[in-house]
Length: 392
Image (cartoon, rainbow, N blue to C red):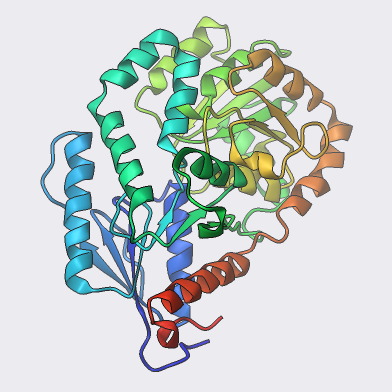
């Protein structure tokens, strides 16, 4: 529907860099499309962005050297744009204090560092303590949640909501849990019929292999080492297909080779379309060290794949160990192997297929858009802009 009055509110979204592989960026793109369809005047404040019809891209790309300068210079420049343009509503996907709504798609940095340190020992803790970047992010996070301008926080899992309440004392009344949407037509059990044979043939995966799929960039954070070590405890017909990118990918290839798994771990690199890989797989594994709620879990469930996730993944909102999927510790390769072994049972996988699909049947873009629009209406109302707010 069009806006309720001829004058539509001006909404700005802040995202430093858009990459077609990122879950947060896909969330932004989907939200923009829904808002444009309802007549909103939208701008994206960004360093790099792919063109989207009906959306004004405001390029903010100050010179920088290193991560701290990169984030600091972008935050400063973005806030200058916000001040100059006088938007009715500003939603940031970065830890920037000049926003009305913050989407905590990256979770809580403090919690990520704690889990990372627990997995890496004293060297990891020392490296984090010495890192100027981590100190900068922690300060930016504190400033963001203490900002008097901040009116609402969007989380994509209850796990992150609880962490924000615990770490920063933000009232639950100001936090909205809005789960990401999943395209139920694009991701469906029918992908198995379309892609299973062709994709296996192209990768050189045997027809009779039990294929576990891992999708995610940033292999250390996503728990690829644990997945590879778990695979080593499984029979030789079990394989792991890894879709994603990492600057240190060679380290994980060496690990697979050292464990005698070079012929059983397949690295595909980043893919524009992961659908063929969901279609070729028998199960999905993601023992991530920390992840608010990765879209790839939703996509796997929509395809009817049984999933194994870690207890530090926001997907525990809906996955119950041994009932509709499996959950284990992020660093517990033995526990992961036990659950992966259970999924070698074809009858169990067949039983879980409709259960997996049913978990996300209601997670459609229209539902997410309606929740976002309702939130925008409430926030605009508090700033005297209700007359310009989006119709649902």
